[in-house]
Image (cartoon, rainbow, N blue to C red; front, side):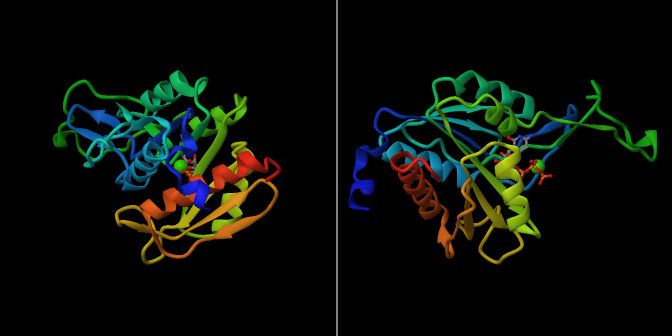
Length: 226
Ligand code: CTP
Ligand code: CA
């Protein structure tokens, strides 16, 4: 514990983090997105810098200030996020995917602003690439951490994501719980591991959750059977 808190625990490590929502354009003035604020991912980036890592933060549009000492790559769409992440994957030691990536995007992006006079409308959507799943399929030496924000059956979905994405740990939360989820400065999370273990954490600040995540990563590196 004392050793973990010493500054250089991530010295020499490259940590790749994604944060915030993505925006999928509909026309020049409209987009499809979600409620992510990026607070969890930015807290992770700030903590990784403090622990001595080289940090690449791939960020969707958020209203947060640039974490000091991190390289920030600003993107908008899921496809741009995928590209930026893949560009940095081979040199990364640890990848933490806290971004809320849009699962679907409009098939057509209208070049001109859509007019209401066009009348009742429906829109066609197509799937975006699952970035974490792609990382899991191409995993070499990297430690891969995913998130799961759920409204129900948290454990069931978290365990399923751990498997299907070949992640080393899933950080799950129930966004309907008071103090958990998108907009606040706190979160209530449970860590799920490959060996079936789980660790439930109490209500913590997002900064404290970030520190707990790196504590787990440190333990994974020292006892890799988890
Ligand atoms: N994720 C990703 N690329 C996507 C969608 C999700 O990399 N296109 C990542 C998220 O960053 C997160 C993890 O996958 O770390 C789980 O995201 P989540 O939305 O909870 O799961 P999905 O697999 O998208 O399934 P669903 O939304 O149906 O629950
Ligand atoms: Ca999703």
